[in-house]
Image 1: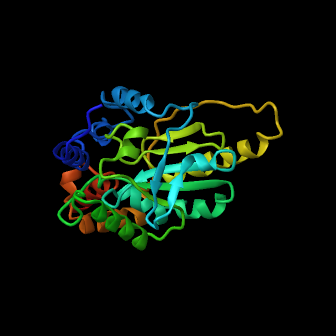
Image 2: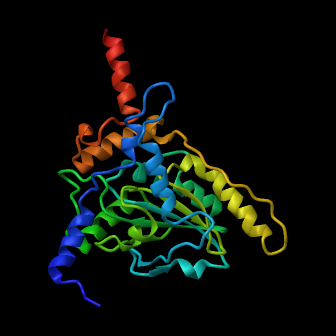
Length: 276
């Protein structure tokens, strides 16, 4: 088996840490008014379904936390369900859903931590700017992860992905910067979302808590399967929207670099209407 040369390894790191030219956002940014959907949706949905399928065993997840401990998903099997969240500092939804939204990951962890662990996997910077730039070294990545936890304190494990993004690549296509997966205590993927929105999670976590509690004693547990295309609430929450704007300044990212931004665009339209 041919091993990678140092030059090719460096190229792979650079490729991964360069923001992907494709993004889930291109679907909703091209949606027509009135509830219609752009033509991008079918291919993106199919791409998200293809990796880490629902109803199948979860991929392995093993990595060092920011605190220097080893996190291993398989160690929770038979004990706890695990919510796996992918994110970075240079991705406003990843940050605002930690503490700013209501509910938030922090408030949900306080409610469900006895039954569900949360594992936050720090990936590449999804939308780097002039202040938060693509990672060149693992130490840079760890510093950004530390800054995230300092500004948005949380107690659940923060796993640092490799510079090449080995964990993220195993779980999702790279155009999905902020996916979320719930692995039940049997090690099966029972929920997945292309984007983190904590407003959806209370019912999701309550459901898996009930399932886990009944599964050792109930031979038959009635289950269903559902899919949804849903609006994300976080951009339209005034507190979260204000945090998004501050984050973009911290990242050094101009709004036009990300395309139309929900909530922000609505405010512009309202301001324009008020001045006419």
